[in-house]
Length: 196
Image (cartoon, helix red, strand yellow):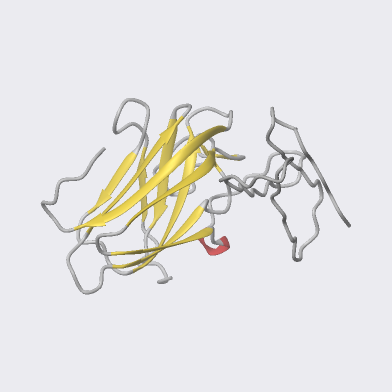
Protein backbone atom coordinates (compact mmCIF):
# COMPACT_ATOMS: atom_id res chain seq x y z
CA UNK A 1 0.00 0.00 0.00
CA UNK A 2 1.27 3.47 -0.89
CA UNK A 3 1.12 6.49 1.46
CA UNK A 4 1.99 10.04 0.37
CA UNK A 5 2.26 13.51 1.91
CA UNK A 6 3.56 16.84 0.64
CA UNK A 7 3.01 19.74 3.08
CA UNK A 8 1.91 18.48 6.51
CA UNK A 9 4.17 20.91 8.39
CA UNK A 10 4.74 24.06 6.32
CA UNK A 11 6.59 22.75 3.26
CA UNK A 12 7.75 19.62 5.08
CA UNK A 13 6.10 16.25 4.66
CA UNK A 14 4.94 13.96 7.47
CA UNK A 15 3.07 10.68 7.63
CA UNK A 16 1.57 8.88 10.63
CA UNK A 17 0.56 5.26 10.13
CA UNK A 18 -1.71 4.14 12.99
CA UNK A 19 -1.72 0.45 13.89
CA UNK A 20 1.28 -0.15 11.62
CA UNK A 21 2.06 -3.81 11.04
CA UNK A 22 5.45 -5.42 11.49
CA UNK A 23 7.52 -5.60 8.34
CA UNK A 24 9.48 -3.56 5.86
CA UNK A 25 8.54 0.01 4.95
CA UNK A 26 10.25 1.49 1.87
CA UNK A 27 10.55 5.28 2.13
CA UNK A 28 11.20 7.79 -0.65
CA UNK A 29 12.07 11.40 0.25
CA UNK A 30 11.45 13.63 -2.74
CA UNK A 31 11.17 17.27 -3.73
CA UNK A 32 8.33 19.24 -5.33
CA UNK A 33 10.65 20.49 -8.07
CA UNK A 34 13.38 18.70 -9.98
CA UNK A 35 16.02 20.24 -7.66
CA UNK A 36 17.56 18.04 -4.96
CA UNK A 37 18.25 19.33 -1.45
CA UNK A 38 19.57 18.15 1.92
CA UNK A 39 16.93 16.74 4.27
CA UNK A 40 16.64 14.75 7.49
CA UNK A 41 14.34 11.74 7.77
CA UNK A 42 12.91 11.18 11.25
CA UNK A 43 11.20 7.83 11.95
CA UNK A 44 9.51 7.21 15.28
CA UNK A 45 7.34 4.50 16.80
CA UNK A 46 4.74 5.03 19.47
CA UNK A 47 2.83 2.54 21.62
CA UNK A 48 -0.83 2.06 20.74
CA UNK A 49 -3.19 4.67 22.12
CA UNK A 50 -5.09 3.59 25.18
CA UNK A 51 -4.81 3.46 28.92
CA UNK A 52 -1.34 4.03 30.32
CA UNK A 53 0.50 0.95 31.42
CA UNK A 54 2.90 0.53 34.30
CA UNK A 55 5.74 -0.27 31.94
CA UNK A 56 9.40 0.42 32.61
CA UNK A 57 12.29 1.33 30.32
CA UNK A 58 13.52 -1.90 28.72
CA UNK A 59 17.06 -1.98 27.30
CA UNK A 60 16.34 -5.34 25.67
CA UNK A 61 14.12 -3.60 23.09
CA UNK A 62 17.10 -1.71 21.62
CA UNK A 63 17.12 1.68 19.91
CA UNK A 64 18.47 3.33 16.77
CA UNK A 65 22.07 2.19 16.37
CA UNK A 66 25.06 4.50 16.85
CA UNK A 67 28.66 3.26 16.41
CA UNK A 68 31.36 5.25 18.22
CA UNK A 69 35.10 4.77 18.69
CA UNK A 70 37.78 6.63 20.63
CA UNK A 71 37.98 10.25 19.45
CA UNK A 72 34.63 10.00 17.68
CA UNK A 73 31.57 12.22 17.96
CA UNK A 74 27.99 11.82 16.75
CA UNK A 75 24.90 14.03 16.77
CA UNK A 76 21.32 12.77 16.35
CA UNK A 77 17.92 14.45 16.43
CA UNK A 78 15.23 12.91 18.60
CA UNK A 79 11.76 13.60 19.95
CA UNK A 80 12.26 13.65 23.73
CA UNK A 81 9.77 12.09 26.14
CA UNK A 82 7.40 9.16 26.14
CA UNK A 83 4.63 7.32 27.94
CA UNK A 84 6.61 5.73 30.79
CA UNK A 85 6.05 7.81 33.95
CA UNK A 86 9.13 7.49 36.20
CA UNK A 87 7.49 9.73 38.83
CA UNK A 88 4.95 6.97 39.56
CA UNK A 89 7.43 4.11 39.28
CA UNK A 90 11.17 4.79 39.13
CA UNK A 91 11.65 1.22 37.81
CA UNK A 92 14.86 1.04 39.86
CA UNK A 93 16.46 3.62 37.54
CA UNK A 94 16.83 6.31 40.26
CA UNK A 95 15.33 8.68 37.70
CA UNK A 96 12.19 10.75 37.21
CA UNK A 97 10.30 12.23 34.29
CA UNK A 98 8.85 10.68 31.15
CA UNK A 99 10.64 8.34 28.72
CA UNK A 100 9.71 5.79 26.06
CA UNK A 101 9.73 2.12 26.92
CA UNK A 102 12.36 1.32 24.27
CA UNK A 103 15.63 3.26 24.26
CA UNK A 104 15.90 6.05 21.72
CA UNK A 105 19.43 4.94 20.84
CA UNK A 106 21.73 1.95 21.33
CA UNK A 107 25.32 3.23 21.33
CA UNK A 108 27.92 0.58 20.48
CA UNK A 109 31.16 1.93 21.93
CA UNK A 110 34.68 0.68 21.18
CA UNK A 111 37.44 2.57 23.06
CA UNK A 112 40.02 0.70 20.93
CA UNK A 113 42.03 -0.31 23.97
CA UNK A 114 42.41 3.25 25.25
CA UNK A 115 41.15 4.86 28.44
CA UNK A 116 38.21 7.00 27.32
CA UNK A 117 35.61 9.34 28.73
CA UNK A 118 32.20 8.93 27.15
CA UNK A 119 30.32 12.25 27.06
CA UNK A 120 26.54 12.19 26.41
CA UNK A 121 24.51 15.41 26.38
CA UNK A 122 21.20 16.77 25.11
CA UNK A 123 20.01 20.17 23.91
CA UNK A 124 16.22 20.34 23.76
CA UNK A 125 13.35 22.74 23.27
CA UNK A 126 12.04 21.81 26.74
CA UNK A 127 13.28 20.47 30.10
CA UNK A 128 14.97 17.23 28.98
CA UNK A 129 16.67 14.39 30.84
CA UNK A 130 19.04 11.51 30.07
CA UNK A 131 18.71 7.91 31.16
CA UNK A 132 21.49 5.47 30.21
CA UNK A 133 21.83 1.75 30.76
CA UNK A 134 25.51 0.74 30.48
CA UNK A 135 27.03 -2.55 29.19
CA UNK A 136 26.75 -4.05 32.71
CA UNK A 137 23.04 -3.04 32.89
CA UNK A 138 23.70 -0.28 35.46
CA UNK A 139 21.44 2.80 35.25
CA UNK A 140 22.85 6.33 35.02
CA UNK A 141 20.52 9.36 35.17
CA UNK A 142 20.87 13.14 34.83
CA UNK A 143 18.29 15.89 34.65
CA UNK A 144 19.79 19.39 34.80
CA UNK A 145 23.57 19.57 34.27
CA UNK A 146 23.34 22.91 32.41
CA UNK A 147 20.19 24.96 32.90
CA UNK A 148 17.42 22.48 32.02
CA UNK A 149 19.63 20.26 29.82
CA UNK A 150 21.25 16.98 30.92
CA UNK A 151 24.77 15.65 30.52
CA UNK A 152 26.41 12.39 31.59
CA UNK A 153 30.16 11.81 31.56
CA UNK A 154 31.32 8.23 32.05
CA UNK A 155 35.02 8.05 32.88
CA UNK A 156 37.04 5.00 31.83
CA UNK A 157 34.06 3.85 29.74
CA UNK A 158 34.14 0.15 28.90
CA UNK A 159 33.43 -1.28 25.46
CA UNK A 160 29.89 -2.42 24.79
CA UNK A 161 26.33 -1.24 24.30
CA UNK A 162 24.97 1.85 26.05
CA UNK A 163 21.20 2.25 25.71
CA UNK A 164 20.11 5.89 25.83
CA UNK A 165 16.71 7.41 26.59
CA UNK A 166 16.09 11.12 25.98
CA UNK A 167 13.17 12.01 28.23
CA UNK A 168 11.31 15.05 29.47
CA UNK A 169 10.55 16.37 32.95
CA UNK A 170 6.96 17.14 31.90
CA UNK A 171 4.49 15.02 29.92
CA UNK A 172 4.81 16.96 26.65
CA UNK A 173 7.13 15.75 23.91
CA UNK A 174 9.70 18.11 22.38
CA UNK A 175 12.43 18.19 19.74
CA UNK A 176 15.97 17.64 20.99
CA UNK A 177 19.50 16.87 19.81
CA UNK A 178 21.66 14.14 21.31
CA UNK A 179 25.45 14.62 21.28
CA UNK A 180 27.84 11.78 22.09
CA UNK A 181 31.65 11.86 22.03
CA UNK A 182 34.59 9.89 23.36
CA UNK A 183 37.91 11.45 24.33
CA UNK A 184 41.02 10.80 26.37
CA UNK A 185 40.92 11.88 30.03
CA UNK A 186 41.97 15.50 30.44
CA UNK A 187 41.07 16.44 26.85
CA UNK A 188 38.95 19.61 26.71
CA UNK A 189 35.39 19.08 25.52
CA UNK A 190 32.52 21.41 24.82
CA UNK A 191 29.51 21.89 26.09
CA UNK A 192 25.29 -7.75 39.08
CA UNK A 193 22.83 -7.97 36.19
CA UNK A 194 23.33 -9.84 32.92
CA UNK A 195 25.77 -8.26 30.50
CA UNK A 196 24.59 -7.00 27.15
